[in-house]
Length: 151
Image (tube, one colour):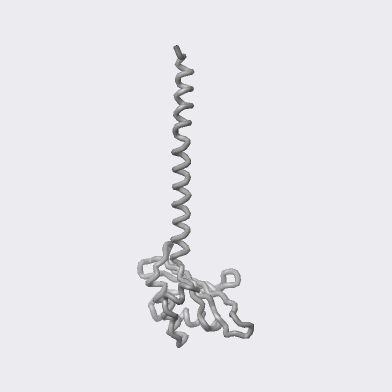
């Protein structure tokens, strides 16, 4: 006959062996969710190369936000990029980053990479609306959405 201590020890050992596979499944599921969350965050960022000098895009962005009645809460630098922060009508943070983009040709025209994120997961409609207004302020027409996505 097994002593109560040995019985408890063997029961715990058997339980731990039986649940090791479950622990791996739980850990794998958690890692998958973290990866999906990171993808959604990346996916929520609207980014496009605008054919204009960064300073001109900076001024056009400020004017575009004023046109859309979105307040400028911060306007400054973040590393080598220019940063403008605002808030949406739904009180979501808006972050617009302007970075100098290298031209594909040695003496090619200046380009600025404009990245817009609204909120944590992104709001593609509002981001694209802001981008369209930046183009309008620059006197340009935005690239079609499918062309912008392939860059």
